[in-house]
Image (cartoon, rainbow, N blue to C red):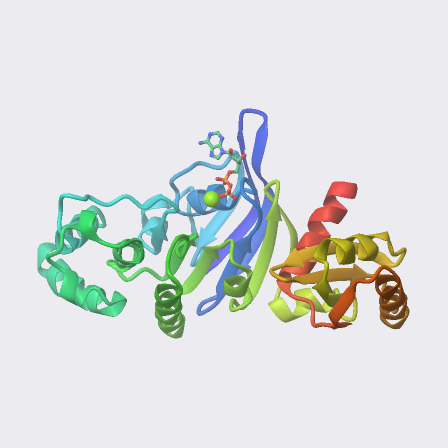
Length: 308
Ligand SMILES: Nc1ncnc2c1ncn2[C@@H]1O[C@H](COP(=O)(O)OP(=O)(O)O)[C@@H](O)[C@H]1O
Ligand SMILES: [Mg+2]
């Protein structure tokens, strides 16, 4: 449904998207993750035709976006990172506006609006002024607007930013229902737990994909190379771990430390840390190998990219 070949777009000297290729199937959800400024929003704007590429090709359901722009754009629903709605208009009026922009005839937009508002769980708020909606409700209205014309491709730019956990969960339920209807979804997200729910993940930095694959494939790179360390005092533990020759890095995740270690060194490192920490009167609550998460891999990639 989405096929991107060697896409490039610069702003002055800055290469925001720098040779990006990817493809996404029907019913597939692909997460674009990466630090701020990595080029996620630029990629999505190129894909929906809001921005012209310097070079490269975009095909949507086989249609060339540059050559048959209108046909290609008709397939897309796009929820921008900063979605703007009309605060003075009601939820329904906002949706009507987006339906008209999308060229839905009057006799179609009304039934479609009720259907889509029910779908996103805003049915009972149709007459509420949009300016009075909570953050999560605004995002749902944004999603409704993006879906009003039955798109086959959905582009979502950090749709759950600033949204409470319950609403996030709802949002995901909606996405899963869309996937069952064979919609192809490209979502950018800063949340690794969201990325790990997607079929595939691409990690973007400086407009380039550093790695791409199923979450399970991606984490298998660090299999056996992550130790979890919990104890006190935290700073001492981190210091001792960082000084160990086979610990490549120590990152804090909440109250835990994740140590990235050399392959095959888990037993040795655990023994050595155990005695070093005890010798300095620190205490260990937990020290064990754990399954790596996407963040472990991404931190690793960022550091290797930095060191290179
Ligand atoms: N319209 C623009 N003009 C100039 N620079 C831009 C513009 N849009 C994005 N950029 C720059 O391109 C880079 C990528 O931005 P963006 O795609 O928004 O990243 P992300 O969404 O991953 O945070 C950033 O350095 C940003 O400042
Ligand atoms: Mg962005």
